[in-house]
Length: 441
Image 1 (tube, rainbow, N blue to C red):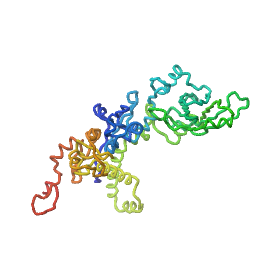
Image 2 (cartoon, rainbow, N blue to C red):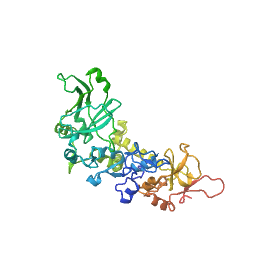
Image 3 (cartoon, rainbow, N blue to C red):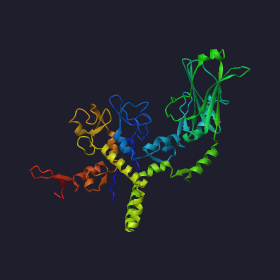
Image 4 (spheres, one colour):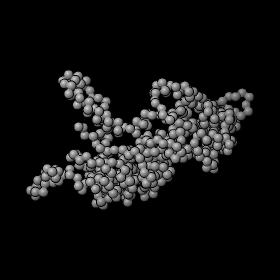
C-alpha cells in the first residue's frame, strides 16, 4: 500500500468562515494569492486583488499554503455565479465570469451592473462619452477622459490622459479575456479641417482586455509628444481616430475552439474544463493511485511474462510522476505548517514575523528574532491562519507510526492526548536513546 499523505481539501465554507476570511479593503474573501496580514502600518487583511495597490502588510505564506486546499466561491456568487475554484484559478475566472460586475466609467456615477446592462446605462445616461465614429479632438491641456465605443456587438473602453504635453492613449476590450484576441486596433491623428488628410500613425496592434477592478491605472498603448505637432502640422489642433478591427469573427473562433478542444456542456457551462480540473485534482490523483495499485497487483498475478514486458519500458509512467509530485506537494504543505521551534503544528496564538514566517505564541515568547530569517517580531497575530487551521483536515503527527486519524486543528489537539501511536522515550535512566510507541515500550 502506498503511503499517500492525508491532507484534504475543503469543499464548502460556512457563513462564519466567510466572515473570518474577508479582505478588509474590498470585502471579498481572502481567495487570491498575494494576501497580507496587518502590520504596524496596516491594520487590515488584504487579498491579492488589493494588496498590490492598498495593502502594506506582511506576506501570509502559511495561510496561502492552507488556503490552496479550499474551493472558494466566485466573488460574484450573489449575482448568480455558482462555481467554486481553488485559489490559483480564482482570479482568472473572476476576470472572465459572465456575472462580473462593472462600475460605470463616467465621473461621479455610482452605477454598477453586469456588462449586459452596461451598454444600456451608458447610452441612456452618458451618451456624451460615446465615440460614435471613433474620433475625438486631441486635448493639449492636462486632463483625464474616458470614452466608450461600440463595434461588433462589443464594448470598448478608451482612456485619454494628457500630462505635461504628453498624450497617453489606451483602448481596452470589456469582456472575457479569451475573446480579446479577436481584435486589434489602429490609432492615428489628422490635422483638423485639412483638405489633404496627412496623418500620423500612433498605434497598430493587439488590443488588451480591461481587467483592473478599482481604477483605470492600467498600462497604456500610446505615449505621444504633443509639441512635435508644431513641426509636423504647424498646429496642435488635430483629431484622433480609432479604428477597431475584428480579425476572427466570433462564430468562426468558437467553431475552431470546439473542433480543437471539444467539451461537454451543461446549462451553458463547460464541464471538465481547466476550472473543473483544478477542483478535482486531489480526488483524481488519489483515485488514480488506488487504481494503479490494483492494476499492479493484478499484473503481478499474471506471472513473469507481464513483469518482463513492464521492465522493458525502462521509464516511469506519467501517473507515477504525477503521484510523486502530488506527494511532494502534500509533504511541503505539512512542513509549512510546522513551528520552526517545537516542530509541531503551529499552535494558537499564532504570531508572525515581519517577513511572513509563522510561529507558536509560546515558542515566540522564548525568542527575540525569527528562527527562519532572523527578522524582528512585532505583535502581529495571524488570525486568518488560525481560522483556516480549523477548516482543513490534517493528518495526526504520528501518521509515520501508522496513525490514520484525520481532523481539523481542534480535533487533532483532542486526539493528540490519547493517540496510541505517540512516541515515548525509554524511562530507564541509563542514557538509553530508544524511542517508540507505548505498545512497543
